[in-house]
Length: 103
Image (cartoon, rainbow, N blue to C red; front, side):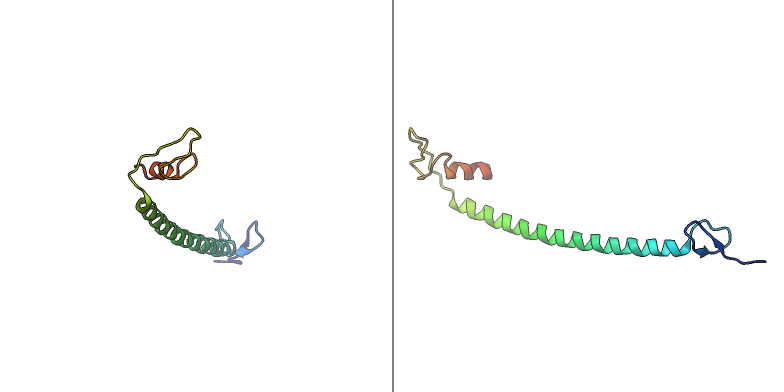
């Protein structure tokens, strides 16, 4: 093999092996940048998973609390739309809770 095994590519880096069309310096830098991006994305996924778990736990507790507050008494709306059974303005909070819980 004669001559310099290195040659210059478009980026300005000398690279080898001769005949390669990829710059190994640039590929290493690109690889390192992709690894860092992946680390950030994985960290973001981890945070979102924790946040989702936390939100799911809060949702479950709120749903249980709302279910415990429901009663079986029918709404009795007066002429102004005020629920006499649940002492609530329109819409009745009990009726809204039943809608949310699909009951």
